[in-house]
Amino acid sequence: MVFMNQLDVLVIGNLKRSEDGSILDANSTSTLIKADGRLIVVDTSTVRMRPAIKVSFKQIGVFMKDVDTVILTHMHHDHAENTDLYPNAEVYVHSGDENIPSGYNVVDSDTEIADGVRLVHTPGHTLDSMSVFVHGDGMRYAIAGDAIPLKDNCTKMLPPAVNISKELSIKSIKTITNFADVIIPGHGQPFMTGR
Image 1: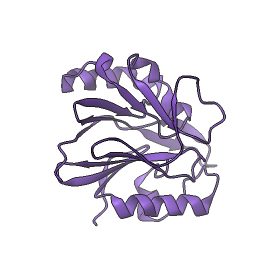
Image 2: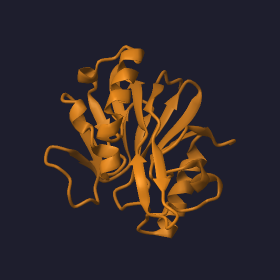
Image 3: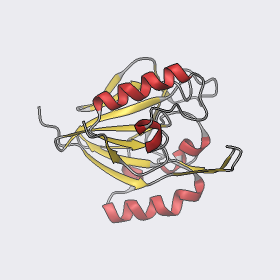
Image 4: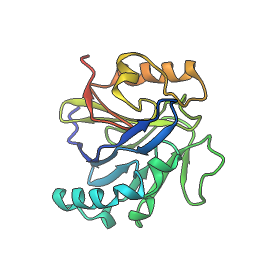
């Protein structure tokens, strides 16, 4: 089956740590998926990234009000602060976080939300972490959130520095790399897996 899904990275996130490992700055990557006539945003990043996100929408020629779905890979603020930019969107999160706002759609298992767009539970960084697996233009993409925050986590098989389980983290990294041709990490440039 050929999927015509398209992905546009709206902003590329960053992650800066001090010498002791504490986080100095964190903004997530935000990605737009065009699938089945739908507009889906995965992770909304931080308020500081709003100007860049708005510029990206103008360049792509899409209105934020037309986004019908927002997927949060997990509930940390650096991935979810701009959810209000999409007033007409249904918001999807995975179960496992105790602070899910009312009105959000909570998924408990892997779920296909559009042809070739699947929500996949990838815990380890947090219990509620999920990735979005997308078939598009002959490639398989994984929008990994902080299951793979940086390319090094994948290439060196390192769990995220902040995690609830190293074992679950490594299992999730393997799940993602077994699927994807291209990985969009939570805080960096997309990269090829070489599979």
